[in-house]
Length: 201
Length: 201
Image 1 (spheres, each protein chain N blue to C red):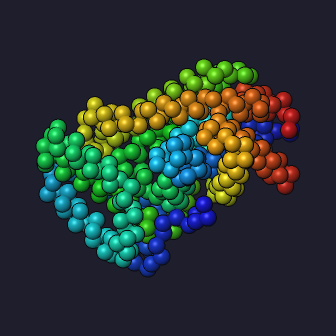
Image 2: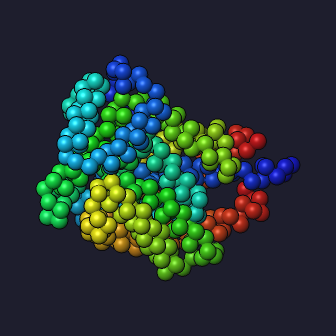
Image 3: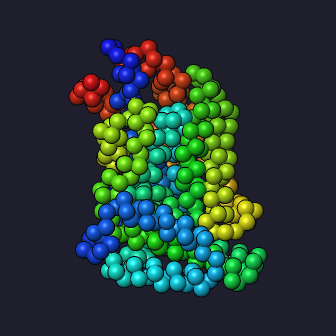
């Protein structure tokens, strides 16, 4: 896991320049509208709008497909199921709605820098102040997590190798127990290091 | 301790634990981190990670670890099982299952917190089944039905495919949590809370 850059595609389109918070709010409104659109014709119009947004953002078709790809089997299964139960029109409406919602979210992800999105989401998480997590600690928590992913991934690799050496490659317990224990040890050492640097003051 | 505020504040050690567990949930979703039957059926342990977060960190710290992970996913980092990430995960029909992780981890933790200083295997299993499956499905299935517009029963039918895997993961979680808590007593929420209260560091 060495690629933690996210899916952002650099660019200078109007969509790229829009603030992250505005795009998040727009996405929420657009998804609500999608759920309310009743007919295939209306959803067809929405599809044209979404395609237009992708054209404006000027991201490559490959990057756009990568956003929709995860739901491809689900959409096929859903279409089949709905065709059997409610008929062709209902099946088209349902599958199109799912595809468009995912594509819309995709265009926001592709045109927003990870750091800008993180800052916008951090503002949404403000209420955690009530449980004693001030904004500084909240952003520390987020960056600590990003930093911990490669560390824990390396721990997992080491546990896998130890497992191989012990000849218990197929045992889930022999993988997960040492991984969780060593993660906890790492976390508690990290916590002590942070307090030693005066973070409790 | 000079003032009340300091006592109630979020301890730095817990900050590190929450960050590391959020990272652990991400790592358990990496493809190839553990494949049960060779590489043919990629079963990731991500949902087991969510149940473990609750069982080991306790209710709201477990939920906070999930929240941190979801914020990073929404910001575009590819931390979901199979390297998925971005806002698409939250507009897809399966969004409810992701959001269900929050109360899921909290309920798992709440149940384990009530099991005392040395939770029994059966108790851990019940906590994972109720928190990690029942609560998650209770949020996930209605959201799926709402997003796709299908009836609740056909949404439940689509979900049935995941039930055997999730049941297996609940059992794995119980065994792993038991193993971890046996070798690292501070991984029991009740023990950890007591240690914090007595102020021992």
